[in-house]
Length: 386
Image (cartoon, rainbow, N blue to C red; front, side, top):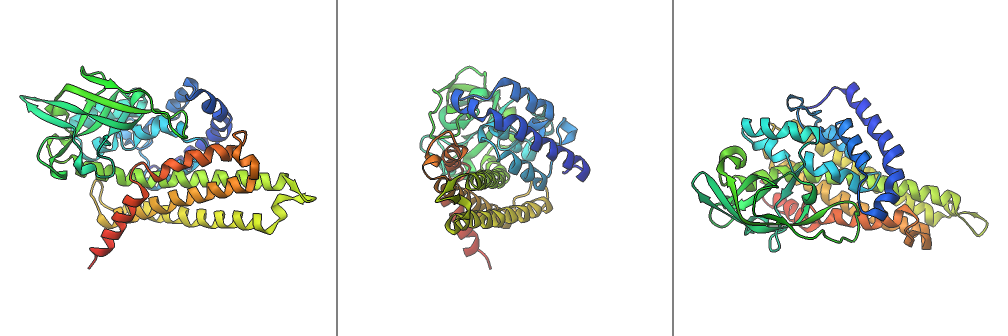
């Protein structure tokens, strides 16, 4: 799945212009009001951003992974809340349906996702199950041709905006084999939302608890129609999502380097530009080298991802994805820290973008699998090699 190079270059240049001319100027509004202006959301729908990864058969654009990471790099140059409006929708929110859904589920859900009519959220994490996703406690008890769902999901991105959830619940015994993936409309009786989370950064992104009390969901809403496959679906979805988080991290690092270089040219100390001091140049050089290494890694892994058979798990690709997510998100944290250091006291004042980015970038090492989970995945893969 991919679009032709000429069409992709046109899309990429449009995204670059949108980021530069509309999103970056709106960052202060976002920080102050904790919301993405509705006019920008409508502009995103008009550009087709809600359907980037949905095949054109269902009304989307149908980008390959190699193309998607390039778009996410560009979107990483601005506040992550803007991408969050549609990022979960085209990523972990709907990818499970695209990968493992029945033809009927795809036909019903994906066109509405692509148009922006339906916002999908991914509901896996719970109060006592985050990194250990196979131990989730939300239960789905069979009741005729329905299931009755009870449990609480935590830190669910876009939950206040969601029209439906890709939600993991336990239909069987303990462990991964007992987990099923459901399509759960957000307006079903028994679903309530917790108060919005107050986060360190990433203002404008919306996360909260999703509480399920005797929620009746048709058995036909199990993704793929087969119980017990939910954990496998989740892991396949997370592979693509993690690679795109790595691409966003690189875009955020690029923005920090650009802001820091500009500041180093303009700020004067001891009678000359700050950037003329070699220790400042050294910090910029370290950041640039790490960014180039991370971006090269992402491009290589994305190409491998595109070459593997569609909708098939490949442990070697998963290991490489984890390497990219681990390195690039940790790298972005180091680059942001250097950016604040280059700005000196000004870097601690929120009049400068690096202060916000320093807070925003911290979350990248936590969601869609912490750095430690990525280390475990890579370590296990190496130990299991022949």
